[in-house]
Length: 433
Image (cartoon, rainbow, N blue to C red; front, side):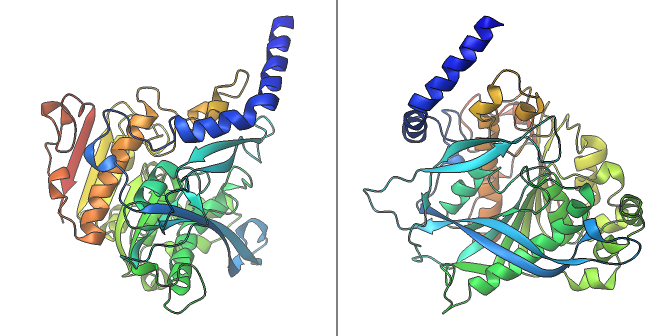
């Protein structure tokens, strides 16, 4: 016990005296989330653009406050949404594309997992001047899991911005590490948040506007990217209406509320929300199929090209009866499914932060990010490669088909874009309507 106490004191003092120097060195010289491993596939490399980042505070007014609606009486509130926007930027040669993101571990609604602030490095420049040379650029809207944050996939958001996209990641209110609230808010608001942000980006991106996004973003050419509960939401926005069972499940959690009916298959309000500006969807480990969120009729409504990413041992969203069942049931969509064999649910996020390795923490602070059988940095590079190929085809008309026209089992031969001996442990399925 004395040794452990002394070790912790020395560790704390080390952080006090050397913390700033260590962070600076990490950002400049060490591995940053999204950097390339030696075996990274071809399209994982960053693009030609510098990357800037800005934070926006938006408000979706007069929304249903499901957490405070009682006895059949609806309560309304102005729903705040913080978003992070990465974009092509003009970076002077003497400026380093380095940033520190502020994040927390833990959960605000779990006393056993207190919030622990930490910082991690990124390769972007805060408030950098926009580069409109080749704009306006396609819009990508990114939706995190439950719990999560807008910084959960920075390895991907920065990478895609460097390739000529405006990437907007949402902090879904009442669904982040900092403000976790009961699940009904997440079930109801995910798709609504996505649609609101799409409309806001179109407004802010209008020509002759005062926002930095004016003339920079083309919201008429949009893709949605969602992870876990984010996948649950983006699939619904793209046409996969929720089932009657999902509405019943929601009602049981909310003392009878039928608010989710507005996102249900066949509902007129739901059909009216379909948005032709959305050209593609990337769904990482989408949650809900094992809970009956979708039925066959609902999945038929998905007709937008979709790229699914799954772990064959996913124990959160499920695989055979979960993600693969969604893929199989989306019979009207041109769709792909990349499977990490023996991976569980964490096929999307950044790697575990160093702080998650500290002794004595709840193991879920590590398992929120880590994969037992995979190197998370390796997963990140592979995701960068395939998402680049899929979105490049769908939003930019690039000739990346060879990177998706592959043998289903990667073990049968080296996949296009992969270095020899490195395309192992993966499957890629493709089905057309």
